[in-house]
Image (tube, rainbow, N blue to C red):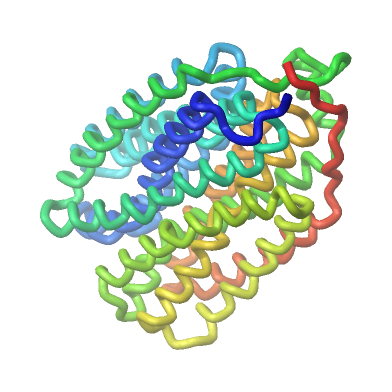
Length: 403
C-alpha cells in the first residue's frame, strides 16, 4: 500500500540535505561581497578574484560526476565529510592569501573541491534514492527551497562580518560556520534505496553512461543547465559591484542578494509543486524565458534601490527554480540507480557555465568599464535555453518499480 506522505527517515534526509545545501550554496553569493574590499587591499583587478571564484565553480563542474559516482557507490556520508574538510581548510587558509596564487589555491582549488563533494548532486542523489518517484519533484523542491534560505541567511551574515572585521576575519568566521556541515552530514546516514529501476535496466556505470550519451534530451537538458550556471554565477558575484557602481549603497546591494535568497525559497518550493502538475520541460522553458525579460530593465531603466530590490525579488523566484525540474527529468528518464552520477554531469555543465559567468563578468567590466555587454549576453543565452528546453525528450526509458 502506497504511503500518502514522507516517512520520518525521508524527512530527516530532506531536512539535513536542505541544511547542507543552505550552507554550501548560501556561501557562494556571499563571496560577491568580498570582491571590492579584497581587490582593493591586494591591489588586484576584479578579474583576479573573479577567476578564483570561476575556478571554484569550474572544479564543481569537473568533479560533480566523479563525486556523484562515488556517492552512488559508497553512500553520501563519506563524500560529505571529505568535502567539509576541504571547505573549512580552504576558507581558513584563504584568510592568509596575499596574491593571485594564494587566492586561486584556497578560494579556488580547496573550496571548489569541497563544495563539489557537498554539492546539490550528491544531496539530491540521496533524496532521489530515498523518496518514491511520485514524490520526488516535491522533495527536490523542498531541498532547494530550504537551501535557498542559505542566501537569505548567509549574505547578511557575511555583510555583518565584513562591517565588523576585514575580509580575512570574515573568511575565518565562515570557516567556523561551515563546520556545521559535519553535523548535518550525520543525518544523511539513513539514506535508503526505496525505488529501483525495472528489470532489464542498465545497472552498470558504463551502460548508464552510454544510455545517457545516446539520449538527445539529456544533452539539451545539460546545455540548458549550462546557461543557468552562467546566469546564477554572474548575478551572484557581479550584482553587488554592479549596483554599487551605480551609486547604490553596500547595504542595499547586500539586501538585494539576500532578497534573491528569500524569494528563491518560494520559487524553489513553487517549482517543485508545479513539477507535479506540468511537464518539466515546459516549466524550464518558462523559467528561462522569464529570465530574458527580467534582465532587460538592468539595461534600460535607472538603477535605483527600488529597481535593485524588485529585480532581486523576481530573480529570486527564478534563481534556482530550474533545479527541481532538471533533477526531475534526470530521475524520470533514467531512474534513481545512477542519479548522482548522471545529475553530476548535468550539474557539472551548470558549474562550467558558472565559471563562464563569473569570469566573463570581470573580463567584460575590466575591459569596457561597464556590465552592459554582459547583460546582453545573459539575455541571449536565456532565449537559447528556453528554445532548447521546450522540445527535449523527457519520457521515462522504463517503468519504475518499488523495492
